[in-house]
Amino acid sequence: MPAAAISLRPARDGDRDFVERVYFETQRWLIEALFGWSDDETERANFADSYDAANTQIITVDNEDAGWLTVQRGRDLNLDSIYLAPQQQRRGVGTILIQRLIAEADRSGMLVRLSTAKINPARQLYERLGFVVVDEGPYKVHMERRRRS
Image (cartoon, rainbow, N blue to C red):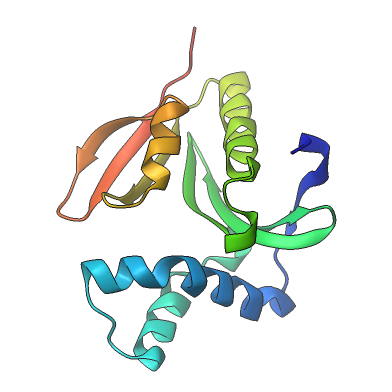
């Protein structure tokens, strides 16, 4: 996938349904496996409580919405979330976007941090890109990628 075909734009109010749909398409299995599915209304409320629209960008591939990511920028970069619609997965999109974050962090002397479910297959991608586990809880691992000298 050419990197030029992948871009980001700020999330808008009208993106809310898309963002929620992609989240549940990609994460429902994980929620069910780890915690059990409460009911649709409860799960939607939980999602609404955690969604950070102000720091979210919509991922586009060939000018079509393909997913979304949320990054907190402070002393370091914290990749809070990255979700790609199923048809966009395993095409290199996530790799390119995370590599861009790594390059941004390296230019600024920052770390890139993230956390993911222990059972999330994306963990292999993060490890391949140089992230290491720095802490873990019952369900999640916390990872960081230190600046390379």
